[in-house]
Image 1 (tube, rainbow, N blue to C red):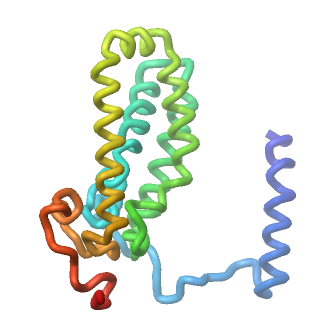
Image 2 (cartoon, one colour; image 1 turned 30 degrees about the vertical axis):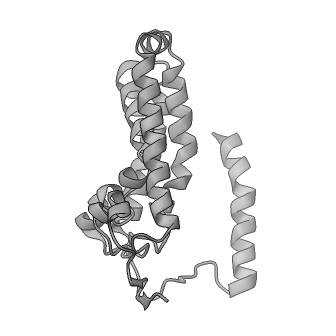
Length: 196
């Protein structure tokens, strides 16, 4: 434990000194007037909303999370890693969901979860490497291939609609705007401004 603390302490001290030298204080708050006011609406919305919901725009996260939950419940050898990955995800989910602007701007999907990719992927790979999982995957590989292709195509499809600005990227859109964009007209007002 001492070695871990000794390894973490120097960068923390360096960050505090740098912040103090730049701002004159070790604590600064750059989001004046904003705070953690998203409540339950934000906690649910940040995952499932048509307004940049993580699982709506990036269904891979759901697969990674499911593998980690399965691994934590089933395999003692991966349990610690899976629990850490799930904990990181849940903490970031609550933090992002309760933030007053849980939509996080006009980005594609929910960019605020990118930090969870490494722990979720590490845990999922540990589970997928278990002999029983490999055997099961080999016996149902056609279904797995179909699921992979479907998820990739779904992600590319929603990404294309976003790039072509077929729905308002600022969050003012419904599920039908996101998934049925080829059947709809381009929005005239995007991010509060009229398009030319």
